[in-house]
Amino acid sequence: MVGVVAAVFTVMLYSFYPLKYKTEIKSAGSLFDVEASLIASVINAESGYHSNAVSGKGAVGLMQIMPDTAAWVASKLAGLSDIPAPLDADTLDADSLKNPEINILIGAYYLKYLLNKFEDKKTALIAYNAGEGNVQTWLSEKEYATAGDDRVVLFTCPYPETNRYVEKVLNGQKFYKHRF
Image 1 (cartoon, rainbow, N blue to C red):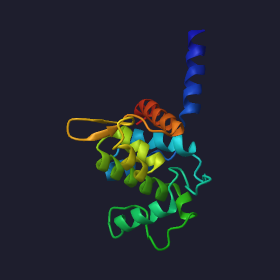
Image 2: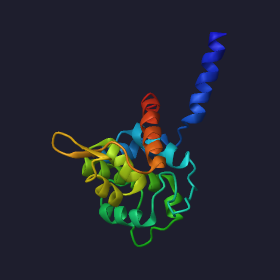
Image 3: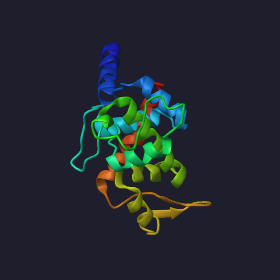
């Protein structure tokens, strides 16, 4: 009986935390020094691993990238020889963002950019979901931010859906760590 319960529990976990595009995730994670488990969890939270997903605000693909953000990232990556997928800011469009390899590359780079900028995973995830501009505003508000040793970090934000998103990503990352 215990074996059956464990098997059912495992099947349920795998349905809540699917994993596709493992090679692309590991490659992008390695290329940009971002934990593959974090990328996988962001994908799950953003699109549920649906490469054709498009949000009501226009975010596209697995990692729900806004086209303007994709063009900015593509311009940063232009000419790098170790990028496995060709990225051209001038020809990058919503359809190309549905390509898992391109979307994961762009999303992983952007996630690394935010991690570097904010030096705190939770703050970076809030920025990924709610926008950098919002985070910059909230960092100056004591009801959302706290001063650390040498930086200010967000502990929450005024968007309940973003707070739920961050918790989902962080909890999911714990599970995905066991799969990489």
